Length: 142
Ligand SMILES: [Zn+2]
Image (tube, rainbow, N blue to C red; front, top):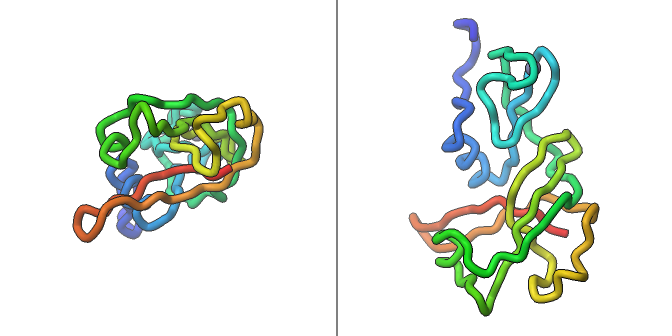
């Protein structure tokens, strides 16, 4: 980074999460080989360049894999998901090539046979809680 570079956010998961609260799905793009990473990487695993930049993704992709979750992490349980109310977690392959793990919305978790691999998906931002406790979670909608 040169001294002329305007202040950019670090390629950290905290910065990535901050973008999510702004309803932006951001990737870090290697300026040398053009590979994009979600979540962001500070050093390109492909060509080892340290010259990466934030770019907003299209948020479009396709469902590559999914699982119905009956007992998830605490932050999902707090949103009311449990054995009787499962949710779908999946891997989405973005148009830009990056693979992202996130919740999948717009599907019926009780009918997994109706969920089709390769379905087109769009980024979705799920908000939960109120006031200072409000959080925004990355999801993809089928
Ligand atoms: Zn690279």
